[in-house]
Length: 134
Image 1: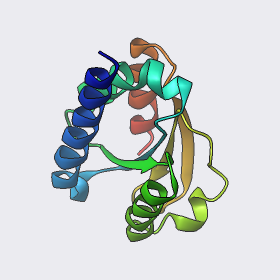
Image 2: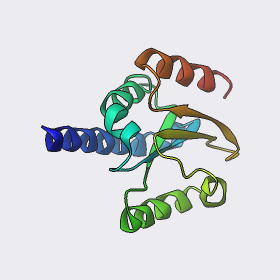
Image 3: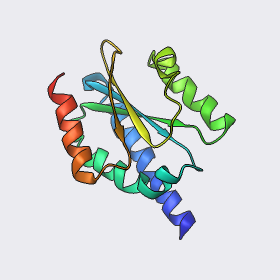
């Protein structure tokens, strides 16, 4: 069951990433999801939080990027994606897992963070709030 949950969570991340790659040009906010396989917050909330992010991003205003900090190999792969977006320096202070770091897609200015542990409703409210200002 544990492996099934992990596989399902990874499938949701993959789906989010592929859907948002298509919507990149219209994205107003880049959302960098800091996660790790060893993170208790991620294990407890990942599936529900990612479903909430997907549900509240039907307009493609958010571009999600996974920053997998599980080990050196996954962190290196994630760093390459973050670098492509011009966020390498801005992400240096954000090493905590279980958070989603938000940046303005045009200016790359930090906006705020969303905790994966927030309720589904609070994630939706936060996403709507941050999107309104863009």
